Length: 550
Ligand code: ADP
Ligand code: MG
Image (cartoon, rainbow, N blue to C red):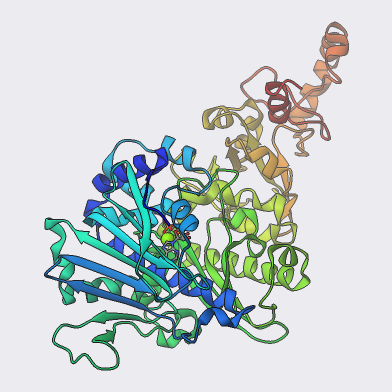
């Protein structure tokens, strides 16, 4: 192995610049990221060793060790996990493999506070070491490999690789701390940060204690319990612990809105831990975005982003499942075709919907925040998840003629409660904007009758409504489609007779341009309006198709 200098991928250079400046106020996260990588390395080794136990090389006691050296000013994070070969180290610590990297950089605003949120969500990972270190040195020896490899960089444009004298399996990350960050050499500081982020990951984290007898444990003492949080019973876990586990899992700085932790027994046996985040990730609408749950089988980590467990419209949920029934060698392909995973997906979807129901009921303000961030995603639900259509509909929020403003939202249950005698449908109108919906001439007669109308104006609304037929036994009716079925008064019937001749003339002069000209009671102030056929395309849909050239 020769010593070589490599250039970082352009995106890495950009990320490094941004991160060092905008994340300084959250500098603690470097330790979370490095411990999380070390824990991942242990998980990966365990997984590979399922097929080849020799990879343990007689050392299956996987752990993370942290040691500060005050004389040298270094902090070292070591693991005895999977390690990296020379080519792996060049690839993993020289590029950003994540999809959507370009889109991510485009979404940055230049405002440090906002961008630091985004960068955190993007998962800064290993490179966050440069927030506190001016030089980072990595020594690694991959499981099964003979030679170790060294990586070194000042976090500017380049990094160096070469041989390393490391013989034990795993990876040491050595941080040469900047002068302002030497507080990370103090045990109390390290303990505090480790507790915050790493208390409940499934690998023990040990800290080197100065002055402690260098006995069998080499002067290291455990800081966390090394017990994966989801394997404990609910009563043993505090809210703070759930929150910090969420931060570990999601790499989010913030708190989740709510969570649900369940052990399911019976036909299938599994544990799920599901979180609803407070803030939307930057890439919620990116098509190639990874989503899904972390999958474990009998506590062994199997994969990230197992999307089979979550429908698309619940893609904002973070969490994990630990199955007792799936085989350890399960692949994405097997998961895709498995009846078991389909049934788990169904149960998990129901669980999430009921978490949201509970949130809406118990904490309406939090729910309003949820709706603002994720409502548009939930609106994909009725089309995707036919079985849970009604439950999803109950979670939807609408503008309506009741408040007649953009600020107040109503639920369908509130709508039903207010329904006056004589009304048997849920009326709605879909238009290009809130005001176009609100001032739609189609609403006049409904307003006159005192019937509330839902005012919809988002792109997805027309499509969503085409998948909703009724809620709690009451059918939905578009105010812009066909007959409204509202009983005419005698006075209106008289008026209708008087105008018959006029209708015939209008029809004659418009000819084939219209399918029908009819008298209506639906207008009170406007002279006429266009109505689409009961079964025809809605005018929104027609506009949408026209806009794509159909
Ligand atoms: P992520 O963890 O999201 O993949 P990181 O920037 O944290 O991104 O790490 C990049 C990659 O570097 C990891 O995916 C892994 O392949 C490799 N890596 C980092 N730290 C370690 C480690 N301690 N042991 C083995 N591989 C590591
Ligand atoms: Mg990482």
